[in-house]
Length: 446
Image (cartoon, rainbow, N blue to C red):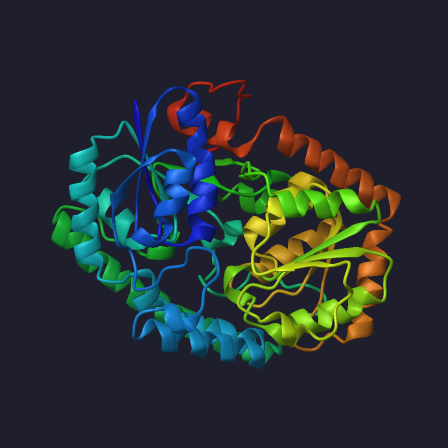
């Protein structure tokens, strides 16, 4: 058989998708990844074939910098970064206003390019990133059965009366003003309606007989794959999801890193792993406060500085490991604490490793994800713009000494996620046949 994976040209998207595809490769199947050139090295590292497919203006092979992006995308990134400094609602408003150009970039061309890729590859199964709306239009508009993967918090697929871009839940210390939330909701509704009109216009051009969508953000493929633990998802929301499977996490195998292994072997003191992801590492002010907070604790720190120069982080203990990029899965496997922006890769990989999280959510689904971890007692969220060094130090100390009940819950969740990895769950849900050592995964209908 042949699996076609369709991914934006971003490492943070491709890595979990490629990890899911390893179940097909392990079963002896051919895997072809349709993505852009920036992530070609990642595709080759997994041993897969690549079809060239451009789904958006920007790209990110690991650490994103505005100056490396094409004209237009660079200013959009700078605007986004500046919005994060003004707070949650301004950031979400900025993202809502950019949504049409961001998620439906040249949609008819993208849809037709996807159709052409499918004709060349001739796949038996297709797995596509849920946020690749143009690609999903190409598949739906030409009648190609496919599974789409929500790589963020499950609220990326709206259900019930939810509006895309408005978090359905907020962490305790990040409760926006009600008037500001009402304004954000109205803005998201306007964007939703315009986005849906654009979706329907392209869908009609591809298939004049197709049924128009009422909400393009609620559309999904034949199977919905959620890269998220079912245990953290409210049962009442789960009941509203279409045919789906929770994958838990997509923890990848990383290549050995001699410097990291040597650093880990030097000392057995607790390790705190810090990363704000490939985009938000630009917030050097937040990273600097995190570093100052952790410097007052009895921990060794591995800090992925991303696009922030090391000198902007202030004086750091010589025992710390600081690099622009670090092997996250490897370090989480030895960590006692993870400090993160709450991106889905960071959250699910930390849960698989059984590591409590100190979260500083900055955008999109990170707020709902942080709220879910707080509700489960497995993490603590703080305002990235308002939390003081003392706030962060006290929070880190609490999480390093997690209450026994919460520690037990986290250990059970970790064991479950590792018992049946996400790749095996995806293989089962898409093919209907058990992959190597796969357990059965139940899915439900709407």
